[in-house]
Amino acid sequence: MIKIDDKSRCCGCGACAAACPISCIVMREDTEGFAYPEADAARCTGCGLCERVCPFLATEIHPRGKEGFLVINDNAGEREASSSGGAFSILARAAISEGGSVWGAATDRACHIRHIEVRHAEELAALRGSKYVESCLDESFRRIKERLQAGRRVVFSGTPCQVAGLRRYLGKPYRELLLIETACHGVASRRVWQQSLSELCDTKHIDRSEITAISFRDKSTGWKHYSFAVTTTHRKYTMRQTAYLRGYGNNLFLRPSCYRCRVKAAGSYADVTLADAWGVEEESSNACYRDDRGVSFVIPHTEKGRAAVTEMKECHIEAIEAGKMLAHNPCITQSVTEPKGRARFFELFLAGHTVDRCVASAAPISLPKRIEQLLTPALRALGIKGFTNRWRRKKE
Image (tube, rainbow, N blue to C red; front, side, top):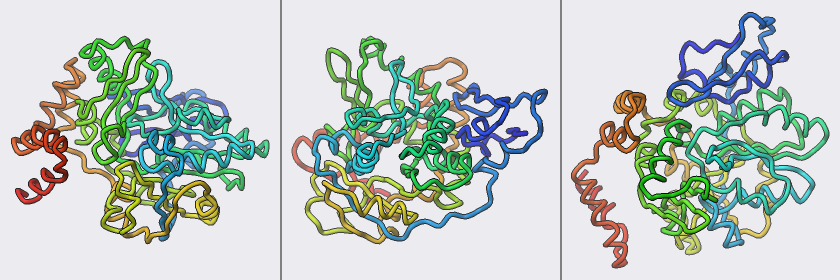
């Protein structure tokens, strides 16, 4: 029977709950806002299947691919709506064109993040863009298995631990399944996200019932200097910085397992990894990567993944050694560091303080950073870019 004594050893993928043959395991949120399995000991038959599918109890190693690709989607609209270069949309459309379906994280009407199934290309917009919140998988794993057993093609996109959970739950390879993992900084608390959004709506006088879209990485201010955006039926609110994004960037309210990710340590369970091509200007002289609209960094880990990537159409694609780009994107292979301020954040948060207050107390902004924040917008408006980064590096 699955039992979580150490929360850093559970990624919340839900594979155990999906695999239980008598459904005696349910996923419940704890006080911090993360889902954990809860088993009914009185009903458990002791089959052990829940433990066998758990990616955090696995010991095998999965090699990562050494070949990478830089990708830019030819469709400007899809690229603009994507977090990086729009590679996901190309892979997803290929599956849909063959009668398959695509599963990924979307924002529902209540602004919760949950995985949904998409069967039509025009519905892919809901799956584009990063969502910096722990996604609810609900019955996704079981329904995906039904599709695969019926011979349907399926693309699943999720965090590395969600991909690992699905792969172990299925128990065998399926030719029709393409597993895509997105580069993961860590998953944030659902409770913190909902509280933060409520506070933001109060401050901006936004009616939550009128929200039509949320972008955690809106590129209207550029790919490298993205913003948070909320779109309502009346207007779009764009913010360069929010308490939530600052807290997320400082790792204050990530899931405990994100600081010691056993999935990343084991390699990759995916067929393909999708990430931002940070550092692309240093690794390639191609001018097309300098327009600040986003570039995808793609690593195929299996022959199936490589075939899917090399067969991509309607895009600019260039091969590159994966190791060069990984040096600029360490979150693909490494866990983030748990900050000292995490305990302070949740102490205040659970006591009822605002997210803004919790973040300010747990990760106070230094004087040099405050100066940088004041200078950067004005310098960018004057066309002086990169000054504050160079100044900060010199100070360090």
